[in-house]
Length: 77
Image 1 (tube, rainbow, N blue to C red):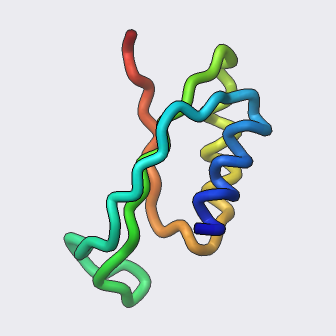
Image 2: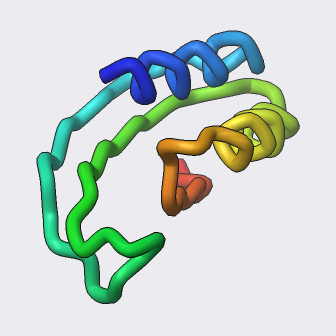
Image 3: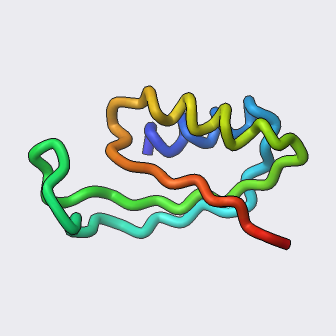
């Protein structure tokens, strides 16, 4: 939960507005990552007027130790 709160903080600090947070739970990974076979999945959807916001969020999440993988995708309107 602390990791999700930290990620949400990065989004708001970069000027984004969080619209939805989904906890997808613990799932089995397709392959072993850092000697782990399972991981917790979260879906955080946010909006931002700034085109630089996703880049700032990715830069901060990349440095988080507890985040193994992440994906940031632009949703077309």
